[in-house]
Image (tube, rainbow, N blue to C red; front, side, top):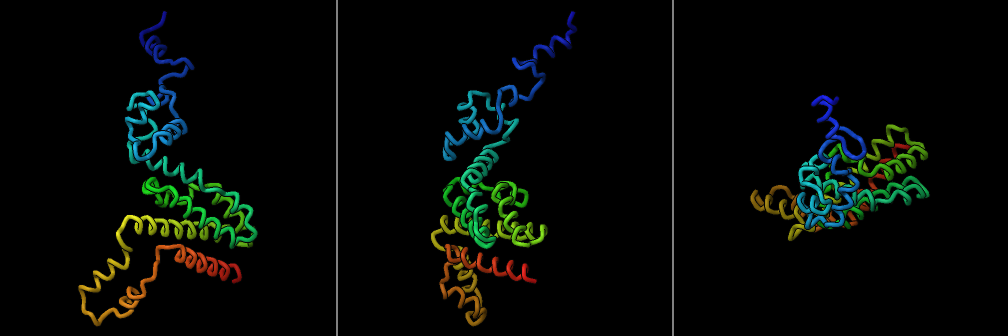
Length: 234
């Protein structure tokens, strides 16, 4: 005869015979299924309730995997970037310099092409290299093969990723503003101080150089590569 405890435990078993799974597990959910459904909905219409309806589950079942809409959008953004950031061209680059340029341009282009969804990318320290594992692996391979030490290759990969992330953020900022944020803020501050001071900064504003466009990324990459070449030769 089953005890009350055994009877209750048996009732909790599902058709797979698994016991006491979490609410999200009982619903047959996993992150891949959630992301597929979220992509079909589209980020502009995505909400926890809309996702639950699309998956035909209770909204609370999603909390096992995703705690809120912002987390969900960040996951969708990361997944979208990963899917569009190809590693093939990096692996087949003729030189490590070309591999670095390819990595940078592909990352920036992929992030910018995401449109509004890109606003939800999280480029914090924990994510910097984890959302693009294969491209980073190929980049490290190119750097190691060129003669960089493992430690130097890692430092260069992090530096290059940070350079790209900074440029992507600049592009988003420029697109959301009426005019370029840095020159506007700098000019506003200069207007509030003595007109004869900070001559170099005033000259910099007057030059009107676009530090948000592709020329800035190209300049940054040339400096990055020149520095890496000097390190390799030392």
